[in-house]
Each structure stands twice: as C-alpha cells, then as structure tokens.
Length: 433
Image 1 (cartoon, one colour):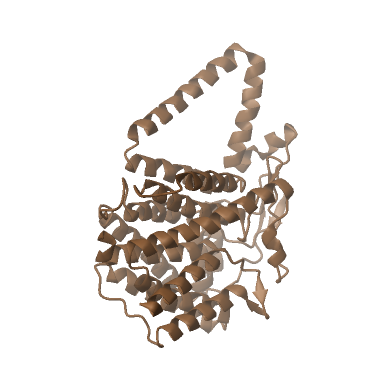
Image 2 (cartoon, one colour):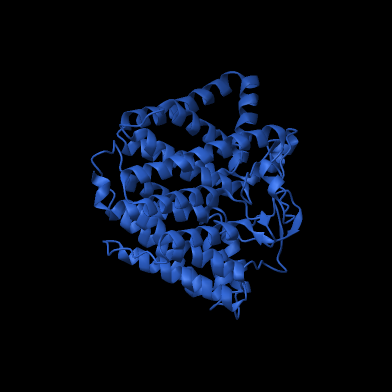
C-alpha cells in the first residue's frame, strides 16, 4: 500500500508539471519535459520493483491497443528521421506512463485528487495569464532557455496571451479542458470550497478570453452550454438563448430609430465580428483600431497546399518538426507572406509522419469518442447530475472538432491525462464505492 501511495503521488506531481512545462524550457541542455518523463519513469519503476504495470482486460481494450500502436508508429517514424525528441515524447508518456496512470488512479478519491491538482495549477496559470494581458509580461518567458520567440500580434489593440504554450489558441484549448474539470467538480454533491471552484472557473474563462482565439472561445462557450443542458438546466439554457434573440431584435429597432446610436452599434458589431473573421480587419483599421493579421492560410486552402507538397512523402511524411517550404500567400491585410505553418492537426500529422500515422491518430480519437458515447450513462453513486464519462465525451468531441482548425502542440499533454482518467474511470468498479 505504501508503494502504491508513493507511485500515485509521483504520477500526481508528474501530471501537474507535465501539462504546464513549456517546450522551450531546458535544463542541463535537455528539454525539461524530457527530464520530467525520465525522472517520473525511473521513480515509478523503482517503487514498482521494476515491474511494468499490467492493465487488466477491460471493455475498452481496443482503445488501449490502438493507443499503443499509434504511439509506437509515431516513435518509429521519428526514429527513421533520427528525431530522438519525437521518439521520447510519444513512447514514454503514451506507452510507459499511460498504463501507470490507468493502474494507479483506481478510486474515487484519487480521481478527485488528480482533478483538483490540475484545477489548482491551472488557476495559478490563469492568474499569471491575466497578469500577462495587463502587463505584457509572460512569466513563463523567464524559463525560455531555447531562445524561442513568438509574436502573438494583437487583436482589438490587446496582446494575445499564450502563457506556457506556443500559441494563444493552444492555451485557450487547454482552458477548455480545465473548465470542464471545474464544471464536473461543482456538479459533485459532496464538493466543498465551492466558492474557490467558482472563482477558479471565472478566472480561467477570463484568461481564455484574453487569448482572443476565436474558434476555441466559441468551443469553450458551446461545450459549457451543452454541459449545463446535460445537467438538467434546460430551462435556463432556453431562456438564455431566447433573451439573446430578443436582444438582437431590440438592437436592430434602436439602430433604426436612433441613427447615432445605430452608428455606435454598427462599430461595436464590427468589433465583435472581427474576433471571428479577419475579413473585418480593414474596417477595424478604418475605425482606428490596431489589428494584426498573422500568416494563417484559409483552412480549406491548406489541404491543397499540403497535398501538393506530399509528392514522394505519402508513406512516412517529411519528418518531425518540418514545415512548409516555398509557399507564398496574401493575408487579409493584402500583405504577402511565406506560409510555413500547418494549423490543421490531421494535415500536420500527414505532412510530418505520413498516411499510416494520420490514419491511426484519427482512428484513436474516433474510437475514444465512440467508447465515451457508449459509456456516457455509466455513473457512480457518488456523482451528481452528470457523470465523468459524459464530461469526457463533450471534451473529446469538441477537441476533435478543434483539431480541424488548429494543431494540438501543447494540448496533447492534458489530452493524454484526460484519456487516462477516462479509461481508469470506465475500468474500475471501485469508483462505484
């Protein structure tokens, strides 16, 4: 029992640090994330008497097998291109630490402790994110030992925060995961310190808004509305939607009756629409607002660009960390730029790892959603209005949709932790106690 507690505490600390350690932070000439993986693995094996954890057969074995196969394939392709970083970041967390997490998070208390720890560290990170928005100082930049530089630009004259991640969209998606955790904790009947969780929820949401990441903010709002609906607050959701429609009609009437107010409303509308489309960038500049457009291509246009560059590389891709070359486009401001990034996750995997890898990656995501849907109504007696599996289902679906317009980069870590918790919850009967 003592060794089991030690292993769980190691995993708890690993999960908290692993999800927020910047990729640009190195120690002793080695990526901090990699050092963290090696240290955690060594400690887990030592306290487990060097026995690899055996996960007993479950009703969702197929998900485990596909996960291992996908991670191993990604690791082998990385090895083919002599990318030790790629080998380590897929094999260690997804093949070695993954079963440890599933094995050790085997009770209600451990599940809740893991969720609480992730919420706590995210709350701190969110506070630092708001500080970043106010002062333009990213505290995590003090850990930037790799000379990494990313210009977030600005939207509506405000800096887009990105915290410990490599991009504002990535941080906003990270917030989507954590807000689902907080929602779940608030739904539990025995939850104490409810005010703390409510404050954390609000602060994390404000921090996500400070990224000014259009698609991810929409996904956050929609996921929370659906969670409210599933929790039985259908009357509240209906009223909220009805009042929103009535407000739009009222604004239209006021705009016609009072031209000056109508002009102000028109400008405000442009501001709102600009958050969701760069097509309004020119109108914003005419109104005197600062609005920087980045080198992002139309997502549909990206498919043609990537397919064009896949000639001769369909099987194993171009290799980890590779980017587009000799692609020149024009952004919404009319400025030409060289396109190097690929913002669509399936296309990024295809470009770097090839067809087999992208097939296995998407198959794994779909199978996980399938099991979450199949087990959505499995609810422990100590849970409230919504089960953990149902929360996982919502997050998995919206994350899957998000990856059609962005690449996952840093969010793969919180996604890995949630996948482990989902499998653990679905596997152990002890969660019923």
